[in-house]
Length: 625
Image (tube, rainbow, N blue to C red):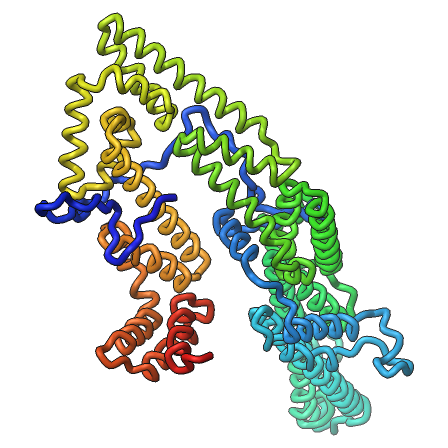
């Protein structure tokens, strides 16, 4: 891609003026036109690497991945990251393995070789904060520790409620025995005896007893009341125990499902084994709301209600699939089948982004895939820009890189487009010779639309170099160039209006090529910055735009993008600005500049701008080193 070097570069830098002076160089001050995505006239022809259909399948379960564009951006970032093989990363993985080993039901011996006592929840729990300290863990181990702690508190509360019920049962037994003794042993005293004759002539004796004794006493009534109260309290505690048990299980299971959908499969395994130690009642059915997305995720695939064991099994299967995908990737890469290897690596990354086989893959092997994908993207861009000459070169290069590159579709598209453009040019020539200017104009526009860089357009240009339409287009080109309206030039050139107008004129052709190439570089940088922003990498997005802004400081769209991003990276840009001010003083303040560069790097550790400044300051401090 053609770039304009030097300080204060613009989208277009005119050639040096002839001796005697001339007008000042134009500045791009035109408003940005509305963006219109280039569309292929015959559809998408390039077999680009697809980051899956926003799902990844494990044992029949389709796990959603989210926005495929975000996944693609994360995959490209992964291809350029060093492997996570530091001592800290290795210690983290050893800690995870130790937790799983401690909680394993097959644990037969301790680390010293003596006979062990089986799984130990407390011993495993103590290791979770150590795992959470590793940055790559993203504090998921801390969340697991909180879930286990909350579940244990709920279980402790249930034990307390059961203990209370046992005490209530003892009190009920004691009160009941006392009431029975009162009813059986306490006899009331007879106070009065009356004999009465009924209307039927029968004689009836009525006796009056003294109150406060036996079943007639207030003490007996109080015991009966207390028995009813105890029974009500026992039933309320039983209900509370059941609700607490269900609630604690539901919260714990929700966290497990969340980690499974996030593809944190090792944490799912740990959570499952903690679950087995916390609840030993045999109830392992997942409490999932009927009709929810998660319910459909499992029920439509399994046809049955999932359990904790289901998540454990699926997590183990996912880990195994990821390991197999990395194994297949290494084999295919060694065989030179980079296209298929790239697909296997994408599958492994989408499934096991946080697993050891993916995280520790050597950078040299990932870079081979990165180079291939970069050329694929260039091919896609060339096809979208209808530059079939460049596309043909890229297809040839891709064939040499990957023996399994599926070139048939791209070759067919290139051949079809170039032939269609050539035929349209021939039709235009025939119409021009027949003095059918309107037909010739339509045919040549069609040819330029299909293939704007067709070399045969030059031949036709020589036939119509002096026609009124070309003169009008050339005048419009010169006017826009003098006004500095470069984006309008690029837009009308893409529509085929200026292709013929500049042919045969080296200066105008060079100007048009420089404008389109540089604007394409700006758009690529903006697109990459947008991808970084989508995954939360605002500082990386700012550096992407800042780099290109150094070359093209006057492009309005680029300036607007930086202004929109600036509030989110204000601390980083302020540190860089202060460092540059100290560095560029008449008497440079090397120490202060170094401090601000270090501050910028602390805010964004991967900053290339901060690293360059630190290197420059170190060269000033230690010139001989």
